[in-house]
Image (tube, rainbow, N blue to C red; front, side):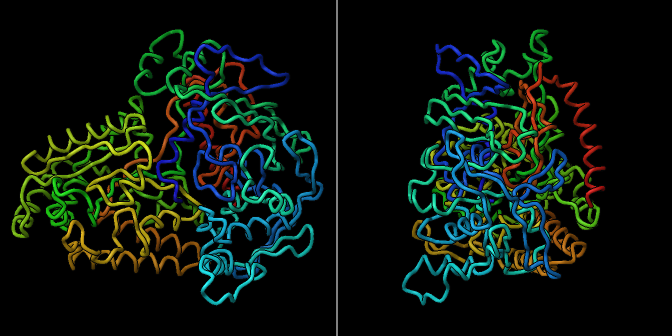
Length: 633
């Protein structure tokens, strides 16, 4: 998913909106009220347009999908009561729940939810004139979607397709059918992503470009409607009285209040009882855990396996000459050099900056997180090709020094000079990223020697960081991430795709001149390794129905990429430590789509869960989830 580093916005909502400094907390409304602060405002409420995770928090709660997930991740009917597919998984047919209403921002009924509402969404997203940032999710799935989008983007090409040719049809008011470009056994898992949410076509047409501009330019069919929306002030979700599953909505009102200093003042406000959740950052965690007054108020969160992080080696550096891009190209094309950094990085030490109490829970040896995808009853990370990587410790000082000893003469022979400068930028608005970079620099230079490497830490811009740094190739080593779009290992191969790769530029051919000089890019040896990786991915994609062969082949491709040190797997994500009156194991669970943002099914606790209670509950939940998945399969 093109969500890299957007998780920080979602975390800002957990720390949540806070009351303006000096302003007293409003009196709670009747019923169960959940109050938070937020520091990052949404760009839009138009869920058909935005690819920003921060923009999804509200739509996730006010518009339902065809399916939803229970607290163990088992798929359940939502706006679809049942579904079926043909023999080769290319045609999926859904029966739509009857009697569901679209309501306005006051909770007043406007229209019935029908199968036509999904047709409206697909037609809108697939039209290039609307410039949706999530259209890519249809590519390779919805029949003709990619071709139709390309056609609408360029009116000069022959207009051979009409919107009616898209692979989505309302067979009648309550029967919806998707026709896919290719067989897809996991199609159900794509349906809780934002661009697969329904819209009432007549309202969408009426609002035009204003759709999603404010709470009055949306309609709602979810557990809540957005009663109040005052940007950089407050937003209030109110329980939808006409909701089809109202008996499973236990919080009556959600009040988000804006304060740019939410991260700083939320903990104090939580202690005063003014809000119901606050992030406890690493700087104050030790104090909270040792203070008798707060030690039982704070707990960890389950690792967020919808995001995976890894360190990228850049094969098309476009940074300034002072950082010696030509020298870096010689180094990065040497596998022994990459391996010396791969085995030399002490990831636990670096992760201690994020979680000083239990960094091991975040550690990930693979790109595809453990517990993310299960094929034929076995977790992806336990397939033979990748199991050894899953089980090992990739920090091995002796092995790192062995690779260094091999790399040095090879690099000298290739014309490299020492130390190799390694530009490592970070985003200054992301908490503790600068500290993590310093730990990485000190640890790697201490192990491998400053005569061998010189890690240069540099702050990137606080706005437009991804475009300015990663997508522009202005780094040598960089911590990137990816978020899952669906429940299949292919989603984790997408960042390294063969076309238009903007992660470490492995697919790029020698580019045009950079700073007046042709780019050297990849050596024949590197190109051969990359070509083999792409071949392995293509083989895996070819197994569209046989899940066992598909998982086996993707495991081989991912293991190949890791074993040749094109990346250094690092961690899964975390919402960190929180003081909260929510039970994280009541929330809907899915490591894709928008399930993780929903309040449906959650109760407000009388007192926060302590960290000891959290650990016990997490152990029980994992055991119960394993049983629930086995029963569902």
